[in-house]
Length: 395
Image 1 (cartoon, helix red, strand yellow):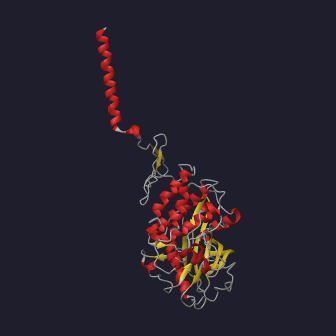
Image 2 (image 1 turned 135 degrees about the vertical axis):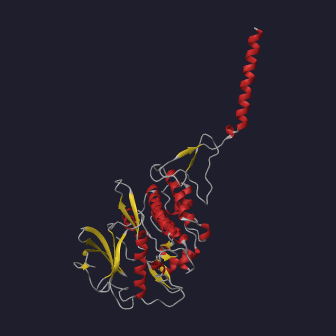
Image 3 (image 1 turned 30 degrees about the horizontal axis):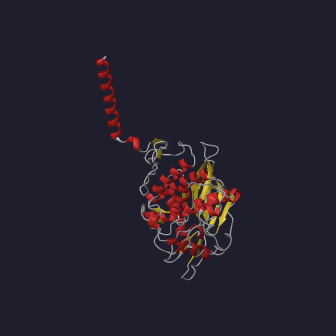
């Protein structure tokens, strides 16, 4: 199931407000429950409703497969939302990864409604889990963040920036290989920005006028708030907010009005995790990882999702995670030097992103590892042997 953009907002700090579609401030004008969409999707139950559409639990005929069908009802004057919806469908259809929602089909009905059929993921979003549990154990939070980062890596390599990553757009599905693990699915690419790829996707952007701010204020990067050019590092910032929220139970910046929150993203430093949740014990490396994602200057964040993935794998090891859970052989990332311990009695863990599911222990060079010490030991052995034979011959 995909969300419908309830968390998102459209704000123009310096320009007049953008005209909203006729259903943006209320509910869509008609229900599709019981109807058959595109001749093959029978609408069963409304599961989500937002400003630009509805999501229904549906049955794909004649397969009998449960799917989520997202629908934007035909309304006059909603051309921009139509373009944004088609962009989302095109992006989802392009991205094939275990941590990204699968799009089966999309198109337009005879009534002029736009629809997108996706895998049905249930109703368990990360936002819903956080409302129930308040915050997550650090190891679980890092494992969820690792899967989100992998989804971002795939999208960014395809030239796609999500631009609306938040806890509501992360679905948690029971992992079929484990009764306890969370399988992450990133959804809702309705605000995605595309820099390359298929011509039909590229033709769908831009979908907003310059100066319009689109996204979820609590998760927006400073450059996004200021309507500056964004790249994949904006998504990394949003993931930093999500991690902060998972670990502390709240986002780093809060306020009574979206503009107040957005101003804090640009102006204020995020609080220390230990100040927000003093009862949570975190290695300083984990807190450093989160705050690096939340750097105001994009140049000071992780350059690529791949770099963040490497550091998240390191965090999982530091938190006592099983090496078989997506832990690779090196903790090195392109932007961070490997950590080494000075004492030979404390080996250093190293990982290599190119190898999955393996962990080795590499002893750091200490004072006894120098080749000169080896040579000295050999010389001492020779001297002792010579002395022994001299003593024997005298006898």
